[in-house]
Length: 369
Image (tube, rainbow, N blue to C red; front, side, top):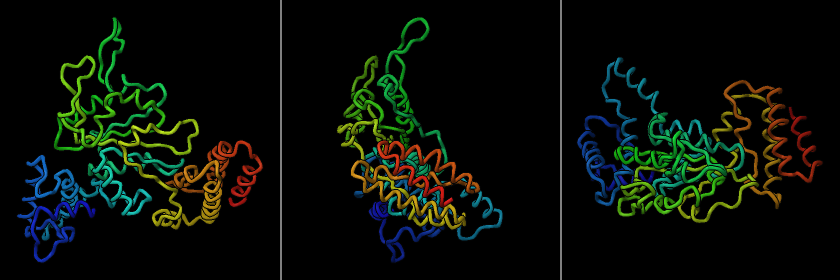
């Protein structure tokens, strides 16, 4: 939010002796300045007074969320609350995702700066959940129209992602890949941002999948100036500036080699940690009021310390909090199932040559239940 506020301040003068734009409501008295900002966001594609309209769209979203007039009838208030219930914003993100406000701001800033972001972390830290909620908060609602999700795997190739020949019954024809088609939609809708989410991004052969697009996804290459001619395409292709890529990467998967260095240079990386000490998770624990759950979580925290200290493992192999998150009731049967059929197989993979250690930890966890 600090970056958004800083960008907004470049556009308007001091108002009523106050530079803190986030103290304003969108009341009638603020309308002239609001209209000025919105016109700049809508009509200008470059910088204005050193401010970026792209960033200011987030400020526009913030103002919309505070758009209730100072004097409203009960009917207007009811309608306003109904609209706000459908809004997904920064506050709702922080309610659902166990990250701090500073973490959220960092995610937004890095995504704006690089246009490409990877959420990495151990099993169960909520990478996919966080990615989806982050996008929802940017769009302003749980809307999938401008979101596309794919999962990379060893057989996923350039033809799936960009373009390639595919059988059509009587032969072969050139067909658009998922990312290519997504970018075309984004080009046709320059007023809105589009979000392409890649699960298990490090499972794919990055050079094979991206091809020449590995250059085009760079933040400073998002324009027609860097367009390239693709196979079977008459017009040149480029990745538009309103496309943002978010990937997820499991740091505990031994079957995957180090991520491609060319991809690493083009993405910002944010590590999600187990949130057992996060204020939001602590509130969740308090709401469950379950002594067995509390005892298990205390042990898992100690188990994570041992995993982190293991020279063959490390922090990237910790056990995440989502294993123990549930909207429903958490009882002894559920906790035993989690321990035996989710945690135990994970430890068996971590300490494959140390069955005694696995048995000891599983015994402790079950005794806590």
